[in-house]
Each structure stands twice: as C-alpha cells, then as structure tokens.
Image 1: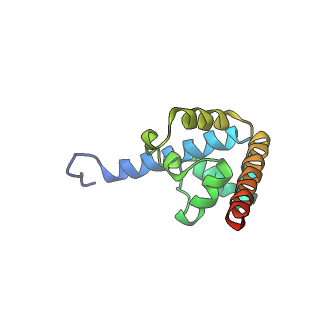
Image 2: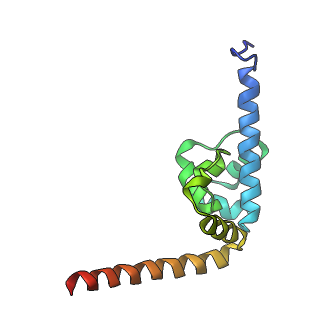
Length: 132
C-alpha cells in the first residue's frame, strides 16, 4: 500500500477513523441513555448499522451525521474531535455548557424548554417595546 507524504498508510488512516467514529458514537450514545435500537429508530436505520458503526467496521454515511449528532446531543465539532474556540465564550458561558452536558437527557429537555420559553418571552418584550 502506498504511503502518504508523511509516511502514514492511507488504509491505516481509514481504519483509525472508522474505529474513532465508532468509539465516539458508542460513548455519547451511552451518555445519552440510548440503546442501539433506540438510536437506530431515531435515525431511521436498522440496529445492525449502529452495531457496525460502533465496532468500527464501517463509518456512518454523511447524510446521517446531522441527525446522529442531534440524537447524541453533540456538535459536529465534537463528533470529529475538532477543538471549539473557547475564546468565543466567556467563562460563565463555558461553565453553563459544561453543566448542561452533565445533565441526563430528560433534564436537558427541561433546560431546553426553559431556554426556549425565555427566548419567546424576550421576543415578546422586544415587540412590545417597539410598538410603544
């Protein structure tokens, strides 16, 4: 097998990526409290697909990534292990995000609902101020 300019075998990179993505899927699926069957149902795939992804046999098709990240409560950056720019968030925002990520899924839904309602109220207040 030919080597890349840095001496890494492309087949090894592909194998590493498949296993890495499988590890990410399994870790965040279990954190989200989802079974393989539940995740499969959310994505509209069969359970065997999830099993193969987690085992590193195949990578998920790119068309599933947005739904997959949403189901796992992670960003695309997190899925691909890309660093986020912490400088774009202040310390309070970083703490809130870390706290949110520690919440079990059902409590995250409560937090999401509270935030959504607060945003709706803020928009209503802004509209009232404009109309006055």
